[in-house]
Length: 315
Length: 268
Image 1 (cartoon, rainbow over the protein chains, first blue to last red):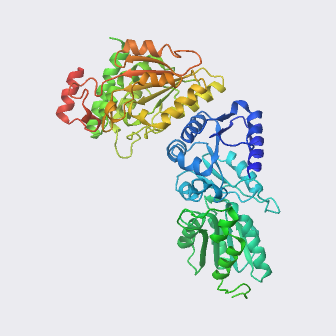
Image 2 (spheres, each protein chain N blue to C red):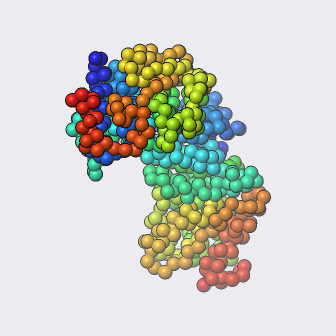
Image 3 (cartoon, rainbow over the protein chains, first blue to last red):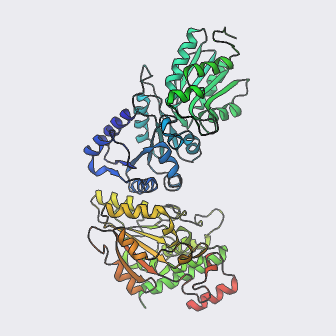
């Protein structure tokens, strides 16, 4: 996703002179090409995220479109008040790039595990929250971020994620995409859980369960129509995200279901618990512990469908 | 009397009437910054009240947003809004709240309120102006209290790294902050040396002497290739004897009799 991000960044900057890139002293082996191509539109502000967000606000107040870049935990939490007051309050055209979504940097510990950023950012007025699920969605979200007037938070994983989409979806701000049709249950994934979600849906299909797969890169604004339609047509919804259950995609979907879907519905969230993971381990290891692996997702889906054991029959 | 001194007196009167009517706080810090604003808006800033968004205007960021009564009064005195508008300060449904909001009143460049935010935004504006080949300057008025904030110094370091000689910070150094004296809460001294060591060219003046203010601000940048810091020594509550240097006027609002006495002191 980082590669798709920087390619998009360079393409956008070639088209639009207003585009700037600021980094909080991160981006080794990622941002060099941009830096060298656009010397007057690239600034390393040092290890000073609050200043970076404030400077970006000043640039936006002068008609520029600055993108600010750091690890998600830092670029959200360290300068949250600057994001709130300088950027969102004034509805400025600043785009916030957080890398290391969820457990991407799991081995670095919870200081680097971005497991609560979506909940925080989703609560800020004017802010669009985007969690692209693969390199293609990253490219599409980047293009939308330039078109959208106002602040956007873009939560990226790391390098090397596979392309999941087989065709180029229409993904304007606030829209999700159906990757696979299904009638027994709808699985809604955001960000870097898209890969495991797709593998789980495919495996369940082989076991006789018809799972609709939706990718929901925009947690805010949320594609409420797509959720209502999924509830109506499949009756069961499971959300999956690499983020604490509080405030993330699952919370947002629960709000729609509670307020707008009167019919009986089965709904489950696959998300991290309300704690900083104490275990040391790689992403796959932690995903296994917290039910975010392919088998973990399948297990929750089977439970939602009332199926016990590995191979069940449709309810 | 210089024109700006006459204007400063009017600004002070407006401030007192506004805060008294609204029963609002922060009158002390509004009175301490009144002379700086008067000289800036009448003698220094390249601005046009008829075109508040004129592209080549000098920008002023009022980072000590809690003293916004002084800014509203100055903008009214300078003709950005009518003086009648000031009667709406704090009124339900009006545009004049307790901290600046971008464009809520013509001439307000950006929203502030939480301390330590203005300087970084000023740095961004100064970079943009320079990259666009513009000659306008960016002035940021900060309080002494907000120099406790790390973000102020992050911005100060970056401004000198960027050699922003189109950026000027003016410190309203009235030596009182939210809950005590600056030298007793977190001592800023040696203050001028701090700015110097962060790479700024500095001047120190009496922030109520219009000649000194004008002389300093009409000479920016103090040095080519460096941002300029003007440390203005001021008195909290300046102009009203019973408010001067008295901490409680960070919070109190003058009652009817106190307003009358204060206006008498300023000269009807």
